[in-house]
Amino acid sequence: AVIHRLPMPNLKDELHSSGWGAGCVCFDNITTKRNKLILPCLISSRIYVVDVGSQCRAPKLCKMIEPVDVFWKCNKGHLSIVHSLPNGDILIANMGDPAGNGKGGFIVLDGETFELKGNWENECEAPPTGYDFWYQPRHNVLISSAGLVPKRAGRGFNPDDLKKGVFGRRLNVWNLSCRTLTQCFDLGEDSLPLSVKFLHNPDAAEGYVSCALSGIIYRFYKACCEANTWSVEEAIQIPAKEVSGWILCKMPAFTADMVISLDDKYLYLSNWLHGDIRQYDISKTCKPRLVGQVFVGGSILRGGPVTVCRDEELKCQPEPLVIKCKRVYGGPCKMQLSLDGKRLYVTNSFYSTWDKQFYPNVVREGSVMLQIDVDTEKGGLTVNKNFLVDFGKEPNGPCLARSIRFPCGDSTSDILA
Image 1: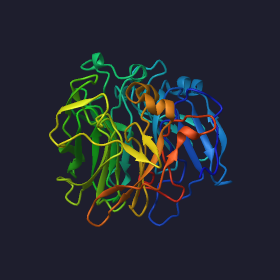
Image 2 (image 1 turned 30 degrees about the vertical axis):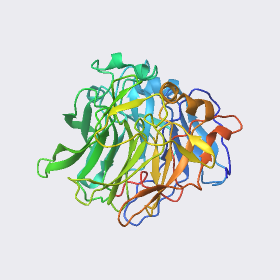
Image 3 (image 1 turned 135 degrees about the horizontal axis):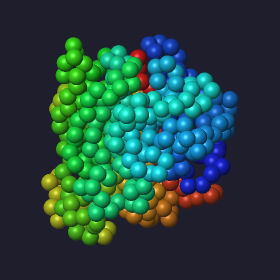
Image 4 (image 1 turned 45 degrees about the vertical axis):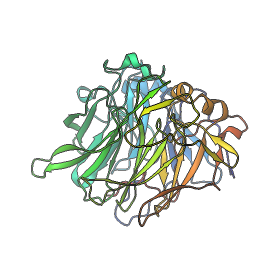
């Protein structure tokens, strides 16, 4: 049941991601306080701060930073991923400049007043594009992904944009305390690195980055402790499917999100175009092993407009998913995992213009949130047929749902120091 609704005061913001305000970084045994939810906007570049502490069952808007302030003070725009820094300030990644050209980097909010402080990195070190990031305080490192050029992405996916620098290709390594760019890795033209995650163990000097268009998940790791240098290696490759009836003759998986369980045992991937969620055992971090897979939609379903001509993995096209008499359209995108690792929640909207292009039924009927039950002992995923949040039935809907946060803690918010 829906407990409360908080309408935003503006349209066309594109609320894409969310993150907790000051205090979401856990320092050993200090209790985490999740009183404020930060909502940066991918299109408008506005920032909302929502009070979820005063009345946890009735959140309210307590602060709004207008786009003009972000533009003038930071020369940045198109805001994406949020994390708190070790000092309590809030770091928000950006994808572009005010005009929508590609420009990476970060902006900083004061962790107590939520005032915009300015840019995090030096102006001359801003990468060409940006999207996601994660850091490990004990190794004094922050690693960020590339994303794509906002003004081109806003028009939808265009094959003519391939090989023109629209889709990012870099993985960036930063000195966390000095805020300087120390290394860059080229992950291949049009690879589109999106989701970045370190292992949760604060001593771990390794993690993964998923490349949406190439279908490759790379493992990054500290190669030399003394020199504090890092390396990358291919860990997983999800082959594209040869198809007809689609925009290209080969359909990439388009890994839109990645989650690692708090015990660092499993890694989860959502393939927005192919339609499956995958569970990998990463006990051996350099050799992830596929132990669970479930289809919850996608573009290759049986009876749809796309025919799979050659598939290295599947023998037949998956069946459509129906839950509580509702046909589920779209593909899995944003995920969130419960603290015990047994419940994986997923929504199926990626970006409104891309939703309209690839999954018009999601825009017409609204997106959904599903629950995937996880076997944490041997591995395995099962769709919970008793759980469905239908955002097509919202009073002012249909709505497109994305980011999921748990007030009691989840697997993508807290960075252990």
